[in-house]
Amino acid sequence: MKALAEEFLDYLTVEKGLSENTIDAYRRDLYKYIDFLDKEKKINHIREAKHSDITDFMMLEKDKGLSPNSVSRNLVAIKIFHRFLARERYAKENVADVLDSPKLWKHLPDVLSVSEIEQILKAPNLKNWMGIRDRAVLELLYATGMRVSELATLTMDNVNIDVGFLKCIGKGEKERIVPVGKQAKEMLCRYMDKVRPKLLKKQAKASRFVFLSRLGKSISRQSIWKMIKKYANAAHTKKKITPHTLRHSFATHMLERGADLRVVQELLGHADISTTQIYTHIDKERLKAIHRKYHPRP
Image (tube, rainbow, N blue to C red):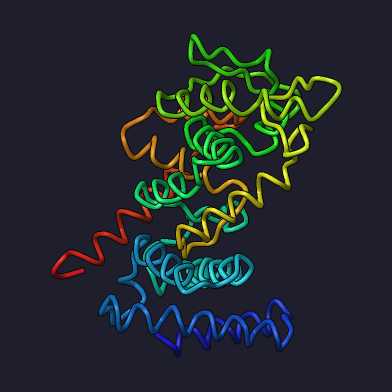
């Protein structure tokens, strides 16, 4: 198969005039792909390769931590190679023809498990004011999938605790209604009854924002981000934490339990459902990881 790869690279050099550096990069990518077909798939001739073999190779490369640019270049080389093979009659068809452009692939964020979320939610000390406030913030972020910026700017007139709904003002000033779960509702009530009035007294002018700082001012996005990192560290979370970690986890856990993709799209405030579909990819990755770990013949 490597002889065919070299013939293809000669074609690119002579017919397309590609630079030596580009040819060398393509050679490395194709040799890795051919070694994968040989050792992992037990394929003896390139004509035996299938669409799924290419997909498996790309997922393996992604799992190794390759950058999106490297993954993109890999797939470009493979697609051009298979196009060449089909045109020169070395293969009956171009099995890479229907693959999506790697530029459309999205980076999959780290998602916490339910138990990891539980550990973070339990981390604040509920014996002091700030611990109650912080727990309410964390509970609300996970219960609703709100963006950190949306929670920071949440106002009292957009909260209906009795009904159990919030009005979120998202990107482009678009509004959406989001339900609040029982546990988040209880902690929010506790904060608003016991803590917020005390924080309000630290300012001469009452604030319309729900969550306040120690000084009685509206809490900032940076403060919420520091809060998430603080409690993730306290819970000994080893995964990469971002401001949207709880949002990503909310969406993934909803889909894992059977929520409709359109419903999750509406809850997250995504204008395009393709943005929400990244979480279905995360779920598939999780299933593949479980399969590899537990199946006797992975």
